[in-house]
Length: 109
Image (cartoon, rainbow, N blue to C red; front, side, top):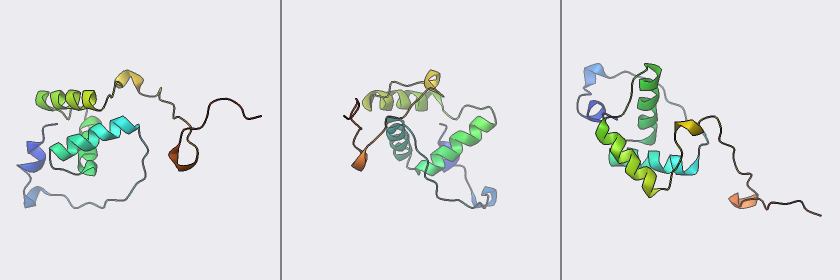
């Protein structure tokens, strides 16, 4: 992500007033860890990062610089995230039991 645009060049006259809402989006655990770490590295909120990624994607633009892509690769390695775009739309959630514990495989008798 070309973060200096978000941090260095935003001035009051170019700011847009918006309304934000809280959302309970679910996503893959390691992917979220990478996103949160990347946002923290750039001293921005997860929401700001996601808004930037989505707005760039909607315009058909890449949100990341070469340096940011390198940082993301390092974070993916650190958090053992082995997914890439080919995994999109093929992810199936593991069913969880009480208190977030994975349900036992096999049938109960």
